Length: 204
Image: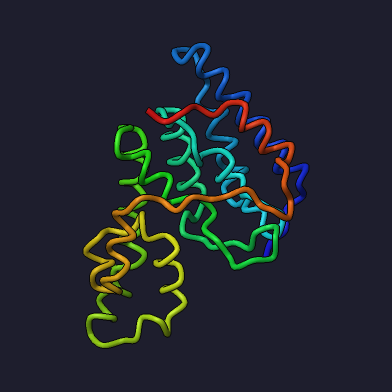
């Protein structure tokens, strides 16, 4: 497990928010190299054991646009693993570093979200197709650590792979996203979360 300095996460989120405001203010003159640099530095800022990942704070629940599309693409090229399960700040079970269910919901009516989800689907096929074929040949899916990842990230796994691995997961890959409630232990937003919260847009 890699722990990150919470001040580092706050700095990354603050820089992301500043760049988003710059892009919204004047997209034509925006310096995409600055966003690429941030993506490279934040690609593995999963904040394990400390709370939400940088990627979650930057992408989850946002009204996605070209800005978010390019940021995700840059992070993937820099080594971001969207299917990583990380320990949260409350000591519970590991959870995905981004909310695949909310992205699936956003993709229903947002073209940018649709393209972002499609890029994860493509990555998922590369990552999990061999596993799916092994299950079809008789391997017990539950015996592999990949099963927990597929189950947790089902909304970003192609349906044909879900059907091969565990047909019960296929419905969760199409269904409404699970809602994430407020952490009753923490009960407050971190500095990073407050910065992002101020820039969120309602879906639709």
